[in-house]
Image 1 (cartoon, helix red, strand yellow):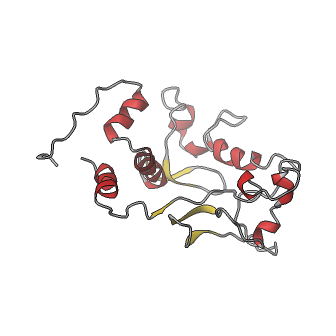
Image 2 (tube, rainbow, N blue to C red):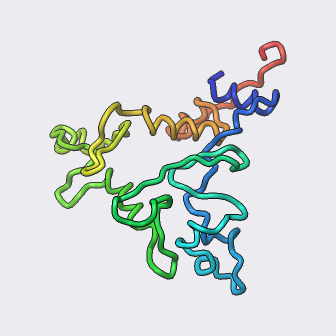
Image 3 (spheres, helix red, strand yellow):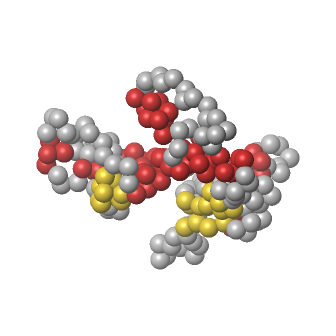
Amino acid sequence: MVNVEQRLDEADGRGVPWRRWGPYLSERQWGAVCEDYSGGADAWSSFTHDQARFRAYRWGEDRLAGFSDDRQLLCLALSLWNGRDPILKERLFGLTNAEGNHGEDVKECFTGTFLKDTDGRRPVHGEQPVLQADPYWRDLLLFYEYFHGDNGAGIGAIHQTGWTGTVGLLTLLFRGASAERLRARIRGVSRTPRPQRTAAAQ
């Protein structure tokens, strides 16, 4: 049994608090339907990004890459400052739906790291000529431990390490799938379910 499955069994059967902490903070709580107190059902206009710094939320919290306890009594996350603005950057965007496409910059930043640019080069490959030009390698997408903030080049270990390994672990944890079933889903292969464990095996 893998560690994640063991922890899920312990949380469900023995009351071990493995789910006490997790990525329970949304990236946007302000202007969501659950925080809509307007008279005309206009959530975006009733609770603006600027108000989000001053008003108390009723149903949740939001932050950049945040995590918290399961009741959101203690929330931990990033806060960034560009050295100029009078506020800290605590959310990915500040425009409402009526003001612009608030997710476009974030989408471009995330996907632009892996997509080919106008010269046919992928930023994630950096200055590695084999990965940029060789027909057997140039369409291989590697997931690195870190990415360069200016040019998007992959840095550090590749494959299931660093934050990509964390994403894989969280997928297993919150989907409740075993490692074998997850690998089977990725390959598109249907596997027979694992036999149920007997009381003696447990």
